Length: 470
Ligand code: GDP
Image (cartoon, rainbow, N blue to C red; front, side, top):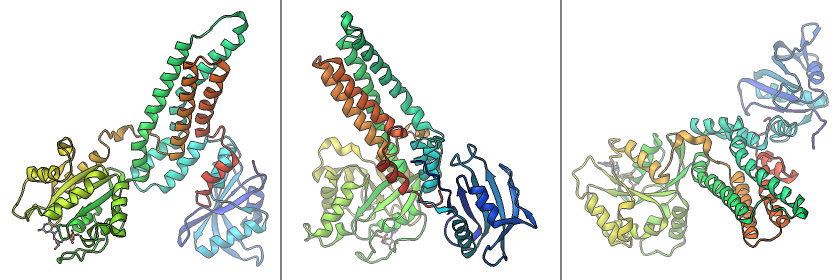
């Protein structure tokens, strides 16, 4: 799959900027750069790991188009592990585009999305999890996400998987030895022992899978649905959580615009808001599509924030809302307008909750926070409660421990399935060879995480999601 072509792409974002970079990678990178970049009357001298200031001369017209800083990274010491030349010119889109065009004119091929990183992988410089982490880092929206991606870029996922793989390899080796010695009628490992070994591996991998809940939140963010009667202050709270004026706040009930999905962050975990406009539409239309859609969206979100107006008595409408969201997973309650005289307390909220379809068990299961969106009070507490309600055991400090990537989780699941099959086979005392097939499958799945066993289609899927120039 390793290509002979020299590839080129613009590696800086589109648009105007201070600088724009064209990157070349491959055998002919230096030669192509030399054909376009000149240093006075002398041919361009590129020394590894050194930046040189030179001129980009349009090969068609022979005129100087820009000054360029050229940096040469020698094979095995570059991002792709091939010869790489980076040409940094001023960030005029036309100049950068012309520079790329000239590189292509000199024989480079336009890089596919992610092709530089794919080459780094194919050349064995990084494993697949590290390549994926590059994309995660580029796409990170919070510094916390970036930190987790940076750790994974260093190879933390492979390091984490390694001991589990080693245990499987050890067990496989023991079983293989058992087969070799079978004729001597020596049972190297008893069935019970085999079963115990497999059980231990199953437990390990289940632990890894559990960490994915937290990992997914770090990666994709926490989705929050905000519901409540008209005029209780949902939009105002939403704005406070966003720290900016996005949703439109109005004084007359029912006129608030839809809560559009926007992003904020809590301690580095991105927060996504789920549109719940439909749930407020006409109360008679309980079966209407809008209501159903909203309820679906709420059910899919990580948690629901029910907003009540603390300055007015609780109403039957509040109770109906509880009925609707009660079956839909985790929730918490904000009693808003805490700057005004309080008309009810936390116990009334819990009573209303239990009177509306929730059993006494779940009465304690949600927190109630008093807020004033108007004065900005209770917002930090609300944020804290949002985070801890979504992830009760969240220990963000151990972020490198988590599996954040769905593909990795799927492969761990595949490995678990194979291990469970092996366990069942061992229980039935089926010949070792059969158990081994399942154990090899389990190992194979784990190898897929780092890319040792990735197929071309899978690589296409992974790298296709990169931006061009990376
Ligand atoms: P929504 O319909 O639930 O989205 O409510 P809005 O956010 O549009 O707010 C409705 C009205 O209540 C607006 O006039 C807000 O200024 C007011 N409001 C919102 N939060 C508070 C609060 O904490 N205290 C007070 N006193 N008024 C608030």
